[in-house]
Figure 1 (cartoon, rainbow over the protein chains, first blue to last red):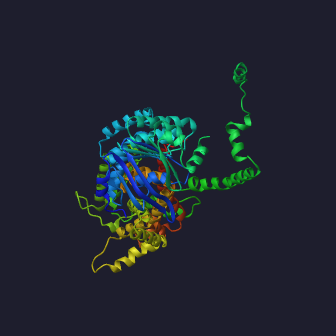
Figure 2: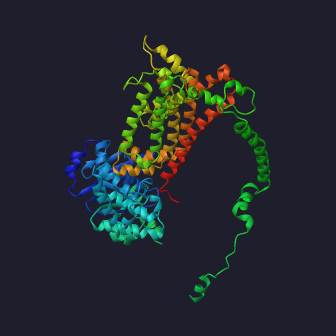
Figure 3: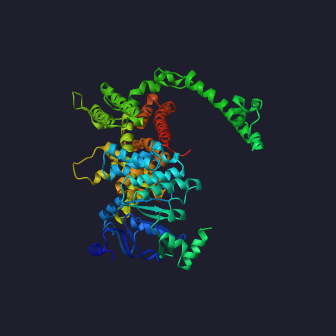
Length: 258
Length: 369
């Protein structure tokens, strides 16, 4: 049941918790894809979630901005509980930015138009102000010179950086990254990770689903390992990589750190 | 390192010209017309057919033809009797519109062509153009109907010929397109009521020929109206054409929508766009662009289908032409008459398809090479 917990949850929640997930379950038909997820993310905290494919990690973060619906448990984002209430969903989506594995830029619009879309139509800003914000964020990811081009004319790494800038234009409090570098050629991964590190340095709350363990080690506050829909292990990067506690974690690490 | 540099350094070669039989005119002829045995045979057969058809056709149409004579003089000749067009031109083009007032539909058509020509450039699609269209449509309405500004009133029953064909097509296609898009979106709706209503509409309309819809609108529908209330026949035909075309456009647009990747919807959702904005700004611009070719096919068909109003005695271009041919004086020159209106229909259809190519090219500006 998703109703009625909001006020109680607000009182119990510490003031700094950006995201609070309590006993969350999700099924795809009969398949129990997320089993009893409990997660708290503080403001300015950076979390990396890793795990084998099919473990539910992407599904988990997609539940946070309601791209997927959970059937049981509670998800509270910045004090607002995620239910079927459309107004709440829209409020949450305006505060949560998402970067996708396959960029999902709008191919029929120029880069700058991709970025100004949200500010103009959702935040209702005038075009000139939206463009200022857009250029500011394009410069942040070092891609301002491509503003007038179309996504199809850019490389994967450039497109992903544009995608990051696009999310930033909505001034989100939380950024979700769904395997942001998995679809990139190796030489482009660094430029995207650098952009993400820059974001981290500025204090953004981030949840990143990724296999980039170097990034996790240098930037994450916590690393989560998921398998078969459950959070198997949760620890600081140092502890996680030096002293993994569960066998499944050890197996996974041995497979990816070759 | 030294070896690599030397190997990479390209040696200068003499510039050779490509062989004569592979470039230029001869090269083109060889590769396109005679590249293999089958193509060569095809080329020879085609050339033979052209030789058999074109000179006699040219002879008939231009050399032996007469252009300005009376019907009697046409009877004995071998060539085309273009006089049938010359003598009946005003009736074919304007139908029963009063003879002295025929400058009015003429001006109306010129306004229409002018507006179309100016609307070709997407750069011009700004507010002034919108106002121009509103003023233009109003002016055309006044010119056709009359009754204002000192113009004699002309009932719509007297409208005919090319203006009527254009009227039915332009309003028909312009209204059918958005209706088709709405139906396509409705068919995708998660609300069962909306979805099934749209499915019912589309399947019913697609299941009957346009002729039967025109019949229904013209003959059956008035039976249901209360005593004394009549709806303009042109309006009824117009509605039938709109409803018919919209059903086909709906299916084509649905195909385009199905081709959209989920990622586009998700990106729009994650930015916070609602359904209406997502469709208007992200999904429809892409989906509609992909289906420009089949959409234009439907619109071209609809333009030609307006000729079916012959069946409900509306005097469009086809019917005026037919009635000239049923005049005993001009009977028998159907070839010339139909060639003439075929050229008119061709001009209409060709400009539509030409424009659609231009539109596609413009909209592909940012595509990956």
